View 1: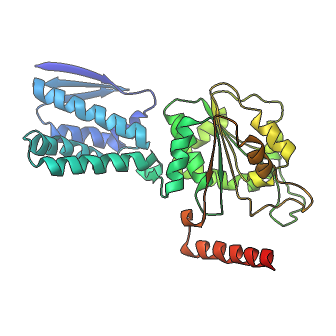
View 2: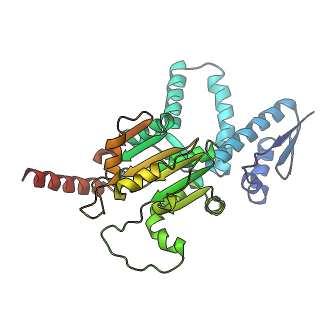
Length: 337
């Protein structure tokens, strides 16, 4: 008779892990009927045959990893992990069909490399284009990145996914998201409400991305305790932002002085991603875009990477690519004329 105790990570909610009415614990009992399982708080206690206890321990640990990675656990995940033990013993342990095994391993690695993180309901958030993948790779090697290109290429979404992944992996302590509060060709006039209500319309695209990646309760907690901060660019002045991923979205609508102020907020252990579309400047025609200015000034500086997205990276509705092409063609004709 062997006894084993496992402590769940403090980042795992026992209610999520055990399931409603302990349905996941009951599934463990059904899979291993000869092992006695007891739970108390975050502690799981097992008693039974040594081999069965060891295998159940491995299953529980793998399920914990999956729960941490995806922010959830369901019966399908548990069964998939359980079946992977059996298939590995049968196909891999007996050494059958080496070529098939190696091909499967390469495919699994490729798919794993493309996954940035698992979002709400376990949905895999992946890089979908070569430039999104390049942005992900350059993020690991550089502390400042410019991601520029047309609408719909996933610049901001990928940047936020990289930030959330870094937070989940505890590489940083917080995420700072910012945008210049510039109206896109409209005069919205007076906005009622407190400060948050006034600036939220400008920042809604950032909230939309975060809601795909984090459960609503966790996102609310992060916003309340300052782990994730969303603020207009004007509120960056005077701050030093350490151990953070800092994202400036719609940077084409900054002035040269504003973007210089923003870039110099970087503290120790931080990374900055600046995203924007040079073809969608909403500034007065007499004002120079800070995004273009900054990329020209900093193009030779070490530790800075620039990823230029184009219409081939557009991942929204197929019409978006055609719309971008039509406007590009008109601009080219006007230059020729």
